[in-house]
Length: 306
Image 1 (cartoon, rainbow, N blue to C red):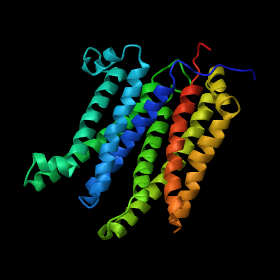
Image 2 (image 1 turned 90 degrees about the vertical axis):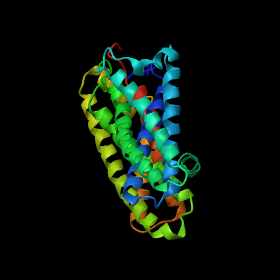
Image 3 (image 1 turned 60 degrees about the vertical axis):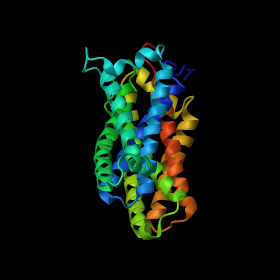
Image 4 (image 1 turned 180 degrees about the vertical axis):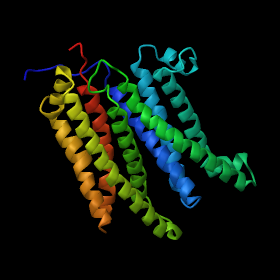
């Protein structure tokens, strides 16, 4: 098969937004669930996750705005009420709400802030943090889903225009969110009174990650099979990934490093091997795979005009 030109209308900045937005949403979801399930037993983890989700989403939105020809006008999209059913408008509302709620969750998780604003009222601070944690978890899932919907509604690209793209990106977002939290836990030092509970929580994260990696692999295979049967352009997109110009990063970075290797490492940890390098390598590779997935799907999304 001859040379083909990869998709180039949407470039590096959009791929970074898709990754950072998904990672922010996944991290907010995981952190919110940790706060709701474990209460105030992991304050440093909750503080890290809350701030990370807010800052990651801000960076992702800045990447998306920088890709537009009129970023200042794009910043006002969330104020557009003339077409409330447009996914662009809905997405803008989600991103603004996400930044606001993730930011409030982060502030409510910072003792220096709550101590200054709510002096001698720790119960109020705890209640506010719990409320923001619940809202952030829901919004995190919605933000993660939207990263897939953003390109999934573009009917001119067979690889993107399928309900499986939002599913794939959402599953990957949840997995990368867990990975970032696990990486923080692996690099940090647990408090003595929470070591046993942290070990149980980490084990639960590992089980969830194994399931999510398996689900991501299945959705990816089904997506490629469906796209391959969706006409000539769809077949070219799949060929670009499996045997064409994107084959090396697809097989080496995504399949081997991003899916197979972390799956094996997570299974080793579940069997009782908790070597430090395993607890660091597995989530790090998941993050690499999540980034590679967005770049590969974006550049392989050939338009029908081809």
